[in-house]
Image (cartoon, each protein chain N blue to C red):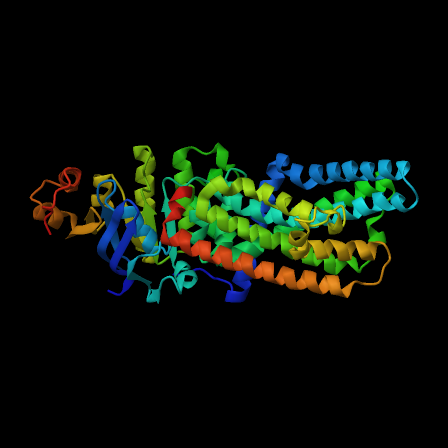
Length: 273
Length: 250
């Protein structure tokens, strides 16, 4: 006697929602996890907003836009950072709670799990950007809405970039175990200085400039800044960023799929049971 | 009797050596099979290959005719798995945890399945308890309920009663036997408790050093090895494995 079940499509949707809900329970009952979502963004806004104001007060009119430059950078940075950290730590949560085996012996497909965590990462991202917007508006009279709707495609590209890097980190954790988890927090900070988040990549030392130019994030940040400063939509930068992001997503998906195969071939699941 | 699980010629090599060496395993519909053997005999690796969690280097696994790994998701909708060593996540309540797994199995009414499961194993009062508030025995029971929410055709249990008090172990055995009788669920169980296996399982497969060394009813196996019960067979095989002997009776 079997139980009544959903159609395959509805069952898939419920699985995705259930994974998202499971992560909601974890965050709700572990307030310290809100640090990444609330505190870091607020600290960054205060830090870079104040640096910008200080620089503007000591410089000429042209430099007075430094505060805006930095605040736009912080807002966009937290799109990519929160997307990456939420997805990567979602997977890590299963290793910490030794739930990997329990989850993998259900009908859930790997992509459904990733979709569930990605869905919850959108909730965290919204909360984090809400915090960023509130602090920027209340302390620096900077309204995120002034950036305009044109910034949405830039945010979408940065979101996908964050998820792609998280998939890569997940692949590393599958392959190398929890020893690789430091990368969940650290890997983006290798990308940050090269991506021109708070300055144009022209300012980088010559030897690093080509690396910066090759990163899709560099072009996404450049496009975002151009629009924030009222310039025409930089289609060229957006196109390069979109192509680079698509490539990065393919690499992330390919790597995590490969590592999942290695994970099963070498019996690494016993690390988490 | 049709096969719920059919594993043929399973081989798995790890860096330390061959863990499983040509294991064949068939579990019929509603059958209760014990998979026994000393530590390092290859029981868990065999189970994990049967569940699609470890890829065999050779051999095939089919669950209700669905070949792994290609049809893993579909096959897993007919399988439940619980292990005495798997913990519950800390940040969820028992009913939240069970509801979530009910949804993962595609159930329309996971609440009903959750309540039924909790009542079957006599822990209805723990519905709203947090994972951290449960004893190890209660966690094991919740794990078994999780594995049976969707009334699977095959229930795979790895050391289900390890670290349980005798009364809780009895409740587990009774619940599993009832479940098997009521729903026709086949059981594949590993355990170090030979008395428990003799009570619960109709047939037993003994592994030693990655190979099947005996298969049959507990009585047949005792006769094959000329020993008085599975416990003595187990001790005999453990000693042979320890000595790294090649003389294992077929």
